[in-house]
Amino acid sequence: MSIELVDVHKSFGAKKVLRGITLEVGRGETLSVIGFSGAGKSTILKHVVGLLRPDRGTVSVDGKEVPKLSRPDLYELRRSIGYVFQFAALFDSMTIFDNIAMGLRKQGGFSEAQIRERVADSLTRVDLEGYEARFPSELSGGQKKRAGLARAIAFRPRYLLYDEPTSGLDPVTTTTIDALIRKMQADLGTTSLVITHDMESAFRISDRIAMLYEGRVVEEGTPDEIRRSENPIVRGFVEGKPELIEETEVAMTRRPEPHGSSHRGG
Amino acid sequence: MNWIRPFAFVGREVLRVLERLGLFGRFSVDSAVALTGVTTWGPLLVLQMRRLGVDSLPIALFIAAFTGIVMALQASYTLTGAVPLYFVGTLVGKTMILELGPVLTGLALSGRVGANIAAELGTMRVSEQIDALETMAYDPMAYLVVPRVLSGIFMFPIVVAFANLIGIIAGWITAINLLDMSTAEFIKGLRLFYVPFDITYSLIKSASFGLVVTLMGCFQGFTTTGGAEGVGISTTRAVVIASMLILVLDAFWAAVLLR
Image (cartoon, rainbow over all chains, first blue to last red; front, side, top):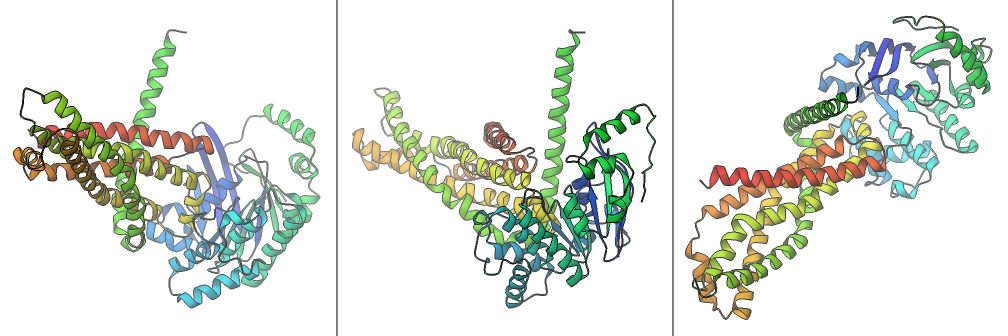
């Protein structure tokens, strides 16, 4: 059970977003992908769940190549993946109960009583017990994120994909969400791929961290290895020093661009 | 070179239109394929029929009533002294059933229904709700598009049938109150050139209008990009293109079925 991307390229028109990403998330592991806004981090998640197809390279989940799956097989695979969206993506015409119950109904095999029980349990796990009858518009940003997480974990997925789970949240809510992510991994044993640009959060929740820059992985390692990294791009990002990154960019423009390879360190 | 610019612009625009046409073609085929997902769209059909059809009745009937009044008065004004007055009934009936009932209702509903669908689905697209549906193993075409398009095809003819009826009743009330006509004269005129095919023609046209209004609304919503501005652009496009298609289809059905 793992997620694997090998030499994945993706362009939108003339814009090359991914330029040869290679990543692997092992069973029960939490890997965070860090990088600047607009670096293509969310694009990685959309490839994993089959919302996007790579121009080149392979994306596998559970050993199955996602772009090659038939529609029924893709839907079958998606039943094992929970996706937490950056802005929660709750269905605003439905109550929180219906938002969470939708996935369970699609899974099948649950009676209405079991669905009610599972929804209540999922909401309790994210500290939102009793919010079933509320609509998304009645929740704060942090509550929406937690409701989105409850929706993603309701059907006990084997994989959890988090897209910027703590962006735009206050420090206290951020810590709460981080604790929830760790709790999900401990309780449910899920394999998690987290997209974030919040370094503190990445250090707290990750088993490994990969740094994405200019469409490639420029460094990969444990949180301690990333902290101690000598890579100027990683240091510039982690320490918030743009001058280090600018110096590297200048140096890179003087060298020819490598083709189809990712830089992996750590 | 400056003289190339206009040609480059035209070329780019032609390519853009062709790309959108291709996308629309693929979207239409995907919608047809999604018809197989009955368990997904079936439970949503009645809700959409109410939202798109029943809730549209007030505006459709309002337009039809005033159209009927104006038709009766204008027919009387045109025919005075030359043609027997009972032809007012003929003109009101024929024009409402063959043309004004379906077309005016279609145009009004392209504003109400088409804009509503494009704005709703466009907002769902830019807020990743459609992606969320997909990740939960729902086919968004079966869940969002099929129930809306089928509701349009089923409900537009029903709304138009009521609009035709109300338009004729409004014309009749106008005729007997303002035009010095009797009910018998109005009905005589109404039956004069009536053929049952008129109703069939009216309903076929209405169903096709329902198809283009809902399908175009769904397509524009699904292909929305950006934020609030993108939703606004999609909504405008849905109404404008559907209105144009209604008029094109109107001419098409006249050429195909009335010759």
